[in-house]
Image (cartoon, rainbow, N blue to C red; front, side, top):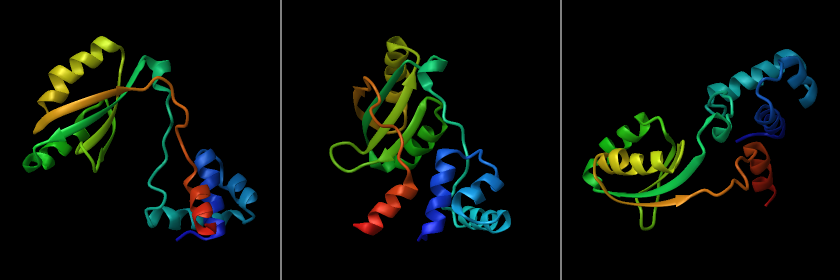
Length: 156
């Protein structure tokens, strides 16, 4: 569980993971070394899983974003999941409850590429029985601060 100081550190890193330890320490009210130790402990505990760059898919040519509900034959779920992990256009995959077994978030360059991916690639993944595709028209909200969410959950 995160204490208040850890939540402030995580929130600051969620806003800008490139912040220096000196700037981070000043922002959360610590000196540099104790701040570095806190960040290291958060990394070691797996709370901070890594650092990455957020890229706008549309600005680099991926104009189509879709969500695909996938129903599979469960005896091949391990093979399906392994294939999904390797596919470069599948951004996210979640095992779900309800009518579908998985929900995929994918990107493609255009509608023709989406059609090709659905017919020639996704339908041929292990065990795929049925897919239902929904198109993203525009993003309303794309990220949350987990540190802020954790703080709010503790107050509830």
